[in-house]
Amino acid sequence: MLTIKRSSDFLIDGIGALYTLAGTARAPRRGAELRDPGLVKDAAIALLGDEIVAVGPRNHVYDSIELTKSATRLDAGGRAVIPGFVDPHTHAVFDEPRSGEFGRRLTGESYVSIAQSGGGIRASVREFRECSEEELREKTLRRLRSMQRLGTTTVEIKSGYGLNLESELKALRVIASLRGIEDLPRIATTCLAAHEIPDEYREDRARYLSLVCDEILPRVRAEELAERVDVFCEPHVFDLAESRRVLARGKELGFRLTVHADEIEASGGAELAAELGADSADHLGRISAAGIEALAASDTVGVLLPATIFSLGLRNWAPARRLIEAGAVVALATDFNPGSNYCESMPLTLAIACTQLGLHPHEALCMATANAAWALRRADSVGSLECGKKADIVVLEGPSIDRLCHHLGQEPMRWVIQGGRIVHESPPG
Image 1 (cartoon, rainbow, N blue to C red):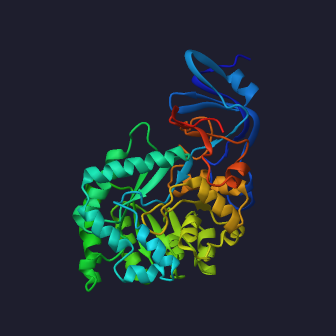
Image 2 (image 1 turned 45 degrees about the vertical axis):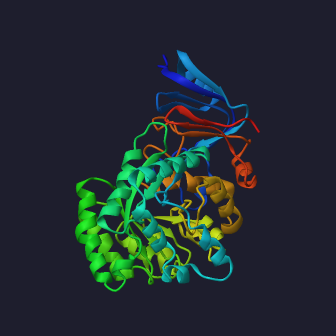
Image 3 (image 1 turned 90 degrees about the vertical axis):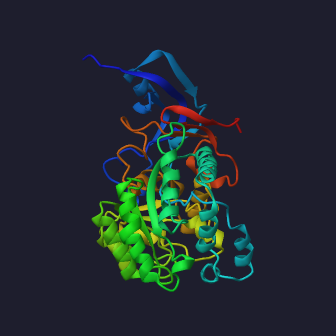
């Protein structure tokens, strides 16, 4: 029988351990399935343009392709290869980090008390409003490059430091100007105008809610500046009824939904996210038994942000094992932001998840790639190494994902490939 070979202009050979996460384009991993990384030894991957055309055992790939005359060949030298990380929760558009608050927290002030005294998100809002669109774009661009060097090839970015019509649009326009740039991570955009009550509305929160629902969200929809709407659902920020109003309005306007849920108190955010069919419920440090049950019975992904708890010096780790055992879809993200977690590193996030949430490295990898892609509803194109998917690939320095999670504080990426092009190369370790 004649086998039709696919043309390939980029071959990655000499892969010692290939973590494909195969099969996750059809469904996310749940429960014990999280331990299956789709591991193939002595493997290769063939690309054509920005697409994977063959992947698997070396001999199988060679039998499946015909290299073009100008094809690039990359020898992985026995290293491990994984899908590019998908980071489904970041606040990467801001002016400067709030590093002064780090010391305040270490001497006993809580995140909530700092916020209530005018710090926290409100401090970032005051700075953000004074920063030009051009400055914000350059700062965000540098942050995206840093994320990419650490293996992130798809990232969600939220607004939420503007908190008025003009500044929220400014944030979303900055993100829009970076979307689709060929050598940057792929970007999913979320409008988080309901991130906090700004200073000028502290005595009239109902008026601010009306501004979000009746002016900001319709304008964002009209200009097609975001695909999702988020809300910080916590009693000291937006309570359950207020959060429901924001999310219902977003859904009415045609946005997909996500929720900052149960971070500080068990306030019903996870249940609300599941009820409304949100893409994800994020944080979950204080999720209730009812919230775990609601997520397990739904397609809403529970996105865990362990680096934030680490950065805040707290111990209210999200109950990862309970969520997994209940059958919920669970993912990981950095929560990169200027205050509570000034960390854009997915490798460090995985390491913290393993040591503090009790995850195996295979589980952490799946949660940071395939399941994270499901949290953004992009699993049809990213999050695993399968034929027809985007060629977003990371060649690690070491021989396994175990070593990446174990070797803290080092540059773990030998090559990062975005859309079939090498966008980062570090010297061999």
